Amino acid sequence: MKCFECHNDFSPDELIDIQGKAICGSCKVLVIQKFKEGLGFDYDLCRKNQVVIIKKGSKLPANCLRCGDETVFILKRKTKWIPPNAYLLLLLGILPYIIYSLFYSTKITLDIPMCKKHKMWHYSNKWAMLGCLLISVLCIIVGHIVISFFAILLMFVFMAQFITYGVSLSRVSDDHLYFVGLPKGFVKELPKQENPENI
Image 1 (cartoon, rainbow, N blue to C red):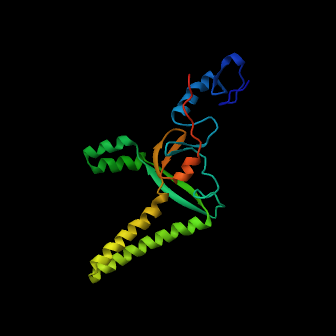
Image 2: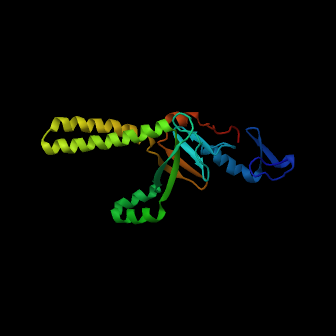
């Protein structure tokens, strides 16, 4: 029989059953760790609460993350993860923190597929946000403070829509990347693997 994880051949008495899968003794610790991280046997992409877990080297689905329609545009979101212990260096000053983060941060570019409709929606919000900012600045210059105030409020409305794709990297492990900020509708559809019982 083959181990489901490593695909090597073993005799039946060398394998243990974990949620209906035959796992060898060497892979047992790895499989348990995967479940603790919210991963399953077959998933390159899954979720743990609102955190999307992606196996390194895997990609998001080819269809639009918003509606599932055909993709016509790839939105590239750059994000960076800095190990949490780096923030302790702030006690010594900003310079040690900056130096540490330059050498030990992880930079990732995530390709987010979008359909034609949501591509237009995304860029419309972007230009509307910048337009409101420009109007606000011009109104302050000419002395129309009230209009400037409402322009700023409207800018924040468009900004809230624009940063819907404000994806950020929340954690990095040896084999997986953990993202937050992806659309809730997309995250909800991902498989959620519970920890196995009686391991």
